[in-house]
Length: 127
Image (tube, rainbow, N blue to C red; front, side):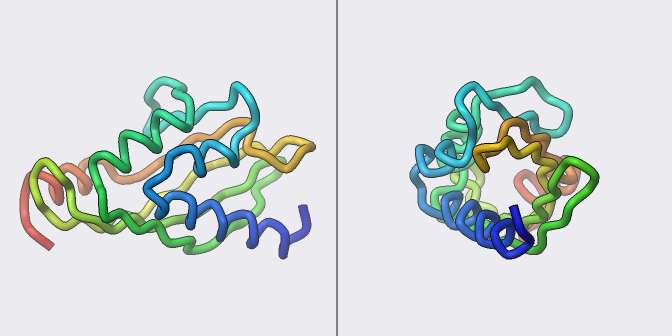
């Protein structure tokens, strides 16, 4: 992908996360591809998206920037939303490290964010 194509892909990917339709997120992944979040088990993207969308029904994911790192792509994002279980407003930034296949789909993703900060916002202080 060219830099412009990668930025377009990342923009559309962030929009899919905002859609409240986990199928739209899964459409960016190759068949059988998965995502691992903060060192957790590899999980189908559809399931990860469904869980976040359930927990944050007003979720907005913004595309902050994208960069190449060797044969990988780093997608930086910010999630903002109200956690349905605690009704606390959350804003957390993180990134996904993607391996993109020859078809232009995510073959593998490793997501990272500050879990302690996330927990503090969900269960602790209000933003």
